[in-house]
Image 1 (cartoon, helix red, strand yellow):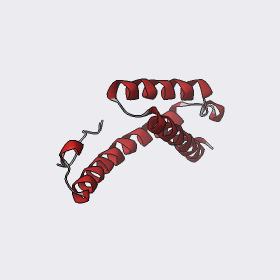
Image 2 (image 1 turned 135 degrees about the horizontal axis):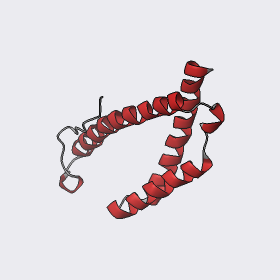
Image 3 (image 1 turned 30 degrees about the horizontal axis):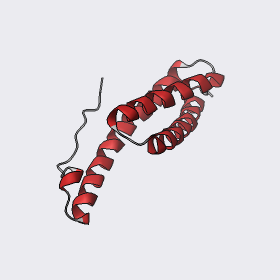
Image 4 (image 1 turned 120 degrees about the vertical axis):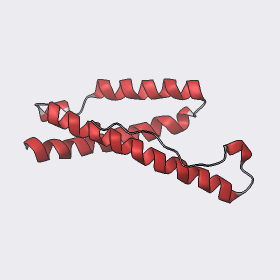
Length: 109
């Protein structure tokens, strides 16, 4: 069993950045960490495709809205703008559903 251990490369806190190079170093470090987390999330799409017996179960509107509401609540708690989090997650969910359809088709189609 592999679970991603989050590692973020060393970088300054945003408030401590004095140059655009500092800002870019921080953004790049976080992007690399996000890629690792998204890779693990993608693995769950493979698991869902493996578990779901029916392709029509891949798209679940109620689950989509549940996920979006949960991330919006988490965003409010951390100070992340909902104007960022909602469209990002809706796009992420859309792409993950497309990926899951492909994975389902490859394994069961």
